[in-house]
Amino acid sequence: MEEARVRILRAHGSYPFDPSTDLRPRYSAVSGNVAISDFDGVVNRYKTPDPMRLYLDYIFGENHDLERRQDSVFYRINNLQRGEDVKSNADEISEIFRVCSLTKELHKRACRHAADNFSIVSNYRPALNALKKMGYRLLFLSASPEDLIADCEDRLGIRSGYVEATRFHFDSHGIFQGMDMNLGETRVAGRDRLLERFQLTKNGLDIIIDDNPVTGVKAGFPDANIWLDDAPEIHNNVSVVNKKARKDLMEVPRTIKQLERGRRVIALIGENKYNKLVNLAHDIMDDYVEAQLKSGYELFYRRDKTVRDTLVYLDGMCDLFPSRKTGIRDDLKDLKLERDERLVKIMMRGLSEKFYKASLEAKVPMDLAAA
Image (cartoon, rainbow, N blue to C red):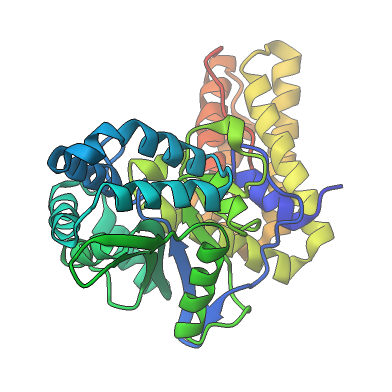
């Protein structure tokens, strides 16, 4: 049987996960927990150019030598996004910038242009405020230039010291000489610097927010919790995927609340009991769906079984399940008394929607189209 912490992740996630992922505390501070987020692909609106892409397009448009080498730059960037040979590809990009004489002045203008012109993801500010109310600091760990992110401070409400990113180096004449790419070992070191800066210890819920599990996993984050990516074929070591968060960042604090709730449930009722309740919740969802395909005796048998199992689940969760707020117990009483087959199916459909929405343990996707 899978351990309870894995079942929590599976209940919320949609794609494969790492069975070693641990819901127990990992990073925390005296004043609360921390969420470490990527920048590009998280802060920009879905299917719009991210800040780094705007930066690159700008410098390519202003420097003709760079423009002629842009295909090579994007090729190397794609390799980095796949987690391939970080040092070699980063060195190649750095060499192109150096040979093509990227200037500090152009770099600064490109950073300002990107910061001013990217579209912010929906509900960024509400999500940031929600995380603060939940006791989370939102820190950024990015491969984008640190100057670019610094120029985004006003728009995004990023505080100084909350960012580790790629550092560009220019000589006394303002000509590019190299960069410290914030990927691979450098990215891990950047994360550690963030944790040390805020005197964080390994005693909190580990929250990593990223749109690319490949670079995240390659960067040393095998226990990351929240991915916003929509490419399932690369999810080979992922805890929770919430694709909705790419369009609405408020999904991030909602997901964190569910992960926190799962951790509290295990602490209060134990892993064995929780495992049984998870399995029961899956069975309940199956019965809700199957009932839509039944009639006569089979329908009423499925109804009665669902009512019994749901009550057992609610009793087992005690006050951890918001049954009073949802009105599920009252709905179960009405369902038990109903004799009309059509109304039974309608009531069970409504109950399944309530149960699935309120129960973290009910991972089974609802598909009531057959009704």
